[in-house]
Amino acid sequence: MIFAINHRYFTSRGHEPDVVVFAQSTDHVSQIVKYCASKHIPIIPWGTGTGLEGGVTAPKGGVCLNLSRMDKIISVNPEDFDCTVQAGVTRNALNTFIRDTGLQFPIDPGANASLGGMCATSASGTMAVKYGTMRENVMNLEVVLADGSIIKTSGLKGRSRKTSAGYNLTNLFVGQEGTLGIITEATLKLHATPEAVLAAVAPFKDFQSAVDATVAIMQSGLPVARIEFLDEKMVDACNRFSKLSLDVLPTLFLEFHGSNNNIEMQGQLAEETCKSFECVKFNYETETDKRADLWKARHNAIYAAQALRPGSKAYSTDVCVPISALPGMITFAKDALKRLNLLGPIVGHVGDGNFHVFLIIDPKNAEEVERVHEY
Image (cartoon, rainbow, N blue to C red; front, side):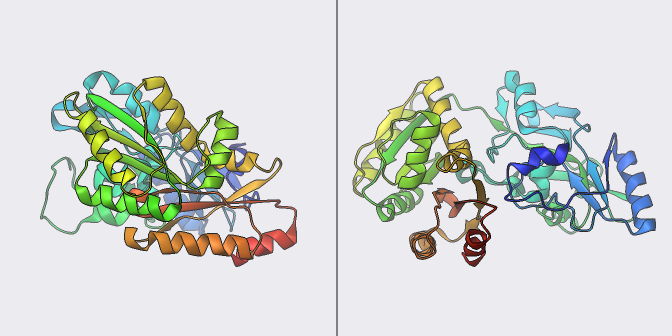
């Protein structure tokens, strides 16, 4: 059943495990790992199954170790801006729990992913430009190694912001996707909830201008919280799927976090910068509901892209380059789409040089799938 959840993200079902085990505790995980190690049985950790990398497929069968029931929030320390959670706690669950503290966990990959999975994949997202990725926000991890032993990557307590004692094991285990060990607990940094939030939509004549404006905004020192790029095909898809009425042009979605005193000034400076790079217009979104609709449309982009071709599947690329190389890389991607006659709306976290091409294909069309592989 759980693999049906993940099926919507891939062009095929892939490989499934022989058995699914729902872990209840770190000791339980340790016992399972010891047994599987003694029998040379592969283990595939599972959080919520929302990752696009295919890490939860089981090419050699084995045991799927589902961590979703390890969902306790162990501690929250508002005065220290940190918390400790089990691996199965989701991003939304944590933010709901800490809402009244005036704090937030801002890393937002789009899906309501498990925090253990976000650590394991070094998740990023729309707010990485201001708050960093998971790598910058993980302080300590509890990990079960391949022999079943349990370690803390930053020591037993592991809540200090700085240490020079030994190797940086935490960074080693963030992004290892279960290949070095299974993350069962994480201590994470929290951030203050901003007093004021301002969003904006800025369409441009061409994508080169949009990327140039992005670089200029980043270089200006403006504390932008989100800056997302959508090409004209992606904007068209979002208009249809999310009932928006945006100009069908290469577009930036922006968001600023700050105080009531400075948030408007941030927006004005961003507007001036964008208009110096042939921005067609600069529309502000100050109402909470309208901002939510805007970012919901961005997070639903992959579904919007699929809706352009009913019955299709989306095959997503995930490329990150230096920001200066972004225009050339997107040009290359667009030229390849045209040459191979593929439909591929483009969206990206341009603030850190990351973008996705959503290749919309018929998985039953072998010739088309071959062109996707060539892409």
